[in-house]
Amino acid sequence: MDRFDAMQAFVRVVESGSFTKAADTMHVSKTTVTQLVQQLEARLRVKLLHRTTRRVQVTADGAVYYERAVRLLADMDDAETSLSSASAAPRGRLRVDVPSPLARLILVPALPEFHAQYPDIQLDMGVSDRMVDLIGDNVDCVVRGGEIQDQSLIARRVGDLQLGVYAAPSYLSRAGSPVHPHELENSHHRVVGFLWSRTGKTFPYAMRRGAEEIQVQGRYVLAVDDGNAYLAAGLAGMGVLWLPHYMARPHLGSGELVPLLEDWALDPMPMYVAYPPNRHVSAKARVFIDWVATLMAKHAPPVRPPGKRPSGAAD
Image (cartoon, rainbow, N blue to C red; front, side, top):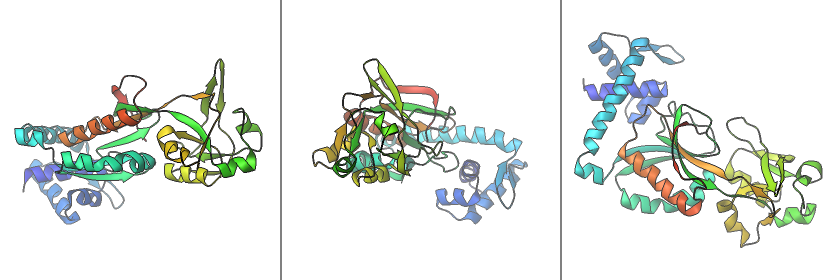
């Protein structure tokens, strides 16, 4: 038995909650993972996992061993990356999840530069606006907009998205231009709703003009849970949008979107990179996080100085 492989297999099973998922992340068969864990249990002479037909649960002994195994695997990774050649060239598979508009408009177009600098990093990028279980989905880090809710995660603030209100000319020709945010609540005007993954609901935006501040949610005939679909609905004339400037900018010059209520200000949306506190931040993850922070400094620099928070969360 390779003790390193067995330990890694056990950790992956605990984190994913499944022998099948652990096998997928290790690119081996489920049988191989099962045998490695069984051999590890035989060597240690303790039961590490409770197995049922529906799920896998870690035992009390398994939980203690898991914490030590995670630290040991992290130390081994540090030992490898401390070598000059490894430090200069981080390598390996990195699993991340990012919002779909950010991926399409900012991250993916810049990836050739990242790959040229770090050619040995294999990037598995999930592109979604859904809530991600970093442990269960075996994701190394996520990039998310909005205040962090899950206080079990470590988060680094990498940017602040400036927001504006926009609509397509086809919508304005039909409904007219609102002159006050209240019209989005109390008239024939409609917005495109965005369903946030944490709640499955839309939420109001705070808008300010001088001493006047109001919360605006708006009424909608369509709500979606994906940023690209949200933008597409607005471009199709389905309603008024609240958009980060980077999403609206390409459509302003072409006339596909028109800015509205420009004398009103909205709070910026913070952007975070988040990761589990018990997962070692490898060299490949560190360079990816720094790369995202550099990109966001160009496209949406933080209003407040960026930095790591002791705890936080992401979708």
